[in-house]
Length: 449
Image 1 (tube, rainbow, N blue to C red):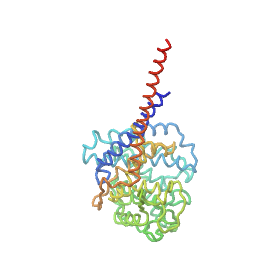
Image 2 (cartoon, one colour):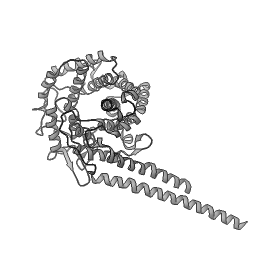
Image 3 (cartoon, helix red, strand yellow):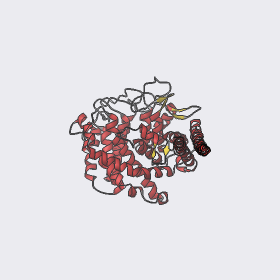
Image 4 (tube, one colour):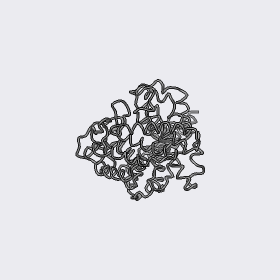
């Protein structure tokens, strides 16, 4: 038992503490893509480790048919598998584009080695069973009526598949879904659509407009004037005095029903630079002014703006810690990278890395534990997406120094190294004690004989 306990402690110290500590410290010091607008070597590494697991997950989930048994109120179980698949596809696109510019970043093109995962992730998003919950909401015309969030994911997956494979398989579906979505938004009195009956989230409509822009680029149709005209719907009545759209709105009147929220702004300012660069810059500045928070122990984005009533956490926000929103800060990494603010993205990324607990068995422990069992790889896919994102050309960039680390990051690294070293030392001590007891038993046995 002493030997077993000793070896278990040594293994835990090496694998569970010293390995993650060395891994994180190495990439924080050497991966220039974490603090400058360059491709991240860590994003490429984790993508290569993720793609086969993601393909297997999608294939098994589609074959199980479990999505057809889920109810409309099971939001994590219904939304997260599709959202995670789009994160994976978007990350693959970003990495493929970086690889085409510099093939030395990886031995093989992401679109090549991840081909099976690309097909599987796309198949999951467009799988009719995975539309079961939106069909319950909107009926059989769910692809031509309201339903902004799902249609955005559906169209995004088809566009990613075409851009990564070049196959014309889904071109007809891209045109059909894109035209229906554009017509629906055009006819909406406020330019807004609902995700679910009675639920309108302006940030999701912005993401839908981004998907439309990508779709019409593939179809080689110019709708820039129409996309530019839609910007007017996201100022005025949606703004509750912060210079940002409200988190929740009335789709008919276009009136914002509550204050802006950190989780929605991180999402909004991640995607809007590809749509309206000037407006995105204004939004991100307001996001920083009202939501960015620095404490002695760490930095991040608030869920609720300073000086406004503070609400309770929900599924979108995740836990709230001293005003920090977990989702706002985590997805704030992609928002900062998309807007060229690597001085903010780098410390946020450092916090994310020490919290993710990387292990040598191809995975990130904390994201796996926090992801829903129906979407176990959502956390890892979203992290790879965020680290793969680069700002648009001509975006003003502020870089960061590798020494700009929050106190919580330094403390976590210390825990990894001190905790791991202590476990290895104590484990060796247990082995020595066991060996010494073995010698004593043998000596006693000889004396008796």
